[in-house]
Image 1 (tube, helix red, strand yellow):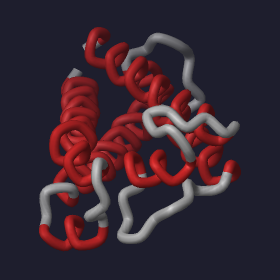
Image 2 (tube, helix red, strand yellow):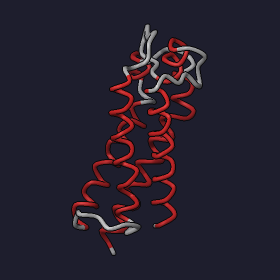
Image 3 (cartoon, rainbow, N blue to C red):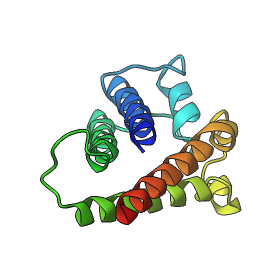
Length: 146
């Protein structure tokens, strides 16, 4: 369980760091704001990235999500009781699983047709969300049964 918790924490912290980087004006993996938006946002006709405030808000949510598996694995003291940690992990699992599944639906494809986002979403972003969701479910069930 600790290995899964650490993996989730590391991956989510990295993704949060990317959002902070974009919030302060970074453009990787693009070369400018437009190419970055087409690479990581993907909505039809997108030509600008979300605002710094939006990037920082997503980063903050991802940091909280990154702390959750570590707390669930008992890597640090948490103010939440075990039942709350398990319930939170299930909710996070559902969010990530829903996003992962959405990435393979025709409706999502119609909303996010811009390349290279559409290809990267099928190859990387959606599978990553599915893996994160599965990791949260495994942690939740392991802790609930222990």
